[in-house]
Amino acid sequence: MTKFYNESSLSFLSRLCCFFLVFIACVSHQADAEETQLMALLEKISANEVLYKNLEYRKKKEMLCVLPDYITKGPKGKNLFKKLERISHNVFQNELYSFQESVSGLSFTGQKSVFRIRSTYDGTLSRQVENSDVRLIPRKEPLPRMYRPHMFILGKHARGKSLAEYLSCGKSGGYFLNVIYEGEEVVQELDCHRIRVESWVKGQKTRDYWLMWLAPERNYIPVRGVGYAIGYSESIPLEIVNVTDWKELAPDVWFPFQVKNVVNFETAASKGETVVGNITKIKLTDVSLAPRYSLDFFQNIEVPPRSNVKDLREGNDKKRK
Image 1 (spheres, rainbow, N blue to C red):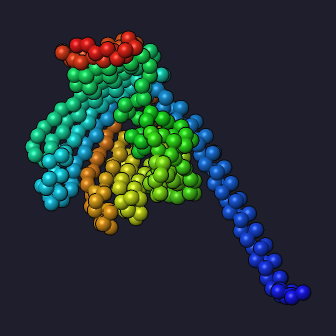
Image 2 (image 1 turned 30 degrees about the vertical axis):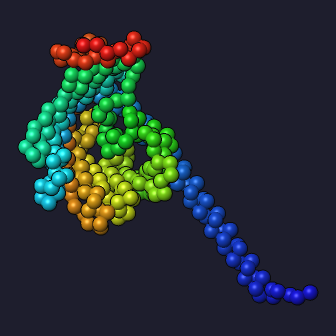
Image 3 (image 1 turned 90 degrees about the vertical axis):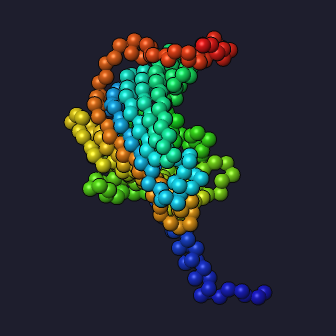
C-alpha cells in the first residue's frame, strides 16, 4: 500500500488541527463574553430608564439646511426647508402622556408654513389633533415624536419602544435588528460602552448600522451616535449626533439639555464626498421628574372649528365634522 503521509507531515497536520481548534474555542469564548456583556448592559439600561418613567420637558428643535447653492437653487431646492423649528411640550405621567408641538418652516422659495399637533392618552382613549384633522382611538397609540432621554438619538426608529426594548426586540418597524457589543471607549471624557445596532429589510444584502456610546456616569444614556447607510457609503456616516450639555436633575440622575445633530448629504456620500446637508440643534428646558397633572389635562384638548373628526370608538371608522 502506498504511504501518502510521512510522520513529519502527520505531525504538522496534527499541530494545524490543534491550532484551529484552539482558535475556534477562543472565538467562541469571545463571542460568549460579548453576549454576556451585552445582556448585562441591557439590564443596566432598563434599570436606569425607570428613573425617567415620569418626566416633563420643553424642547426647542431648530434645523438649518446648509446644502450648497447648486442644490438649493436647483429643482430639488423647491421641496426643501431652509429653516424648520419645532417647539414642544412633553409629559409622561405614569401610563399617560401629552404631546403638544408647533412646527414652523421657511422654504428656499420663501414660503412659510405652520403646523400644530396635540396628542394625548388618558388611560383609555388616545386623542390626536393635527391642524384640522382629529382622531379618537380607544387604545394607547405608539408615542408621537416624544422620547425619554435614552431614545433621543434613536427615537424616530423605535416606534415608541424604550432603548432596552428596542435593543432586545430583534425587529422594529419592518426592519430586522442585530446588536453587537464592541467594547469600551472614552467619549466626551466619559467612559462608555460602544454598541453596534445593525438594521436591514428582508432581501437586503448589506446592513445599515448605528454606532452608539453609552455612558454609565450618565445613567447609560447614549452620549454619541453615528449612523451609516451602506447603500450610500461604507466610510461616510449620514448622521452624527452628540449630546453637548448635561445637567444633574437629582443625585446621580442626569439629563441631556443640548443635542446637536449633523446630517450629511447622501448623494455626495455615495460619491465619496462629505457634504453637510443640515444641522439641527436641540435645547431642553423646564425638566421635571415629577409632573402632577389632573386627568383633565389629558382629556380636554382644543379642537379647531370645522375639524374632520375620525372617531374609531364606534368601530366603523365613521367620519364626522
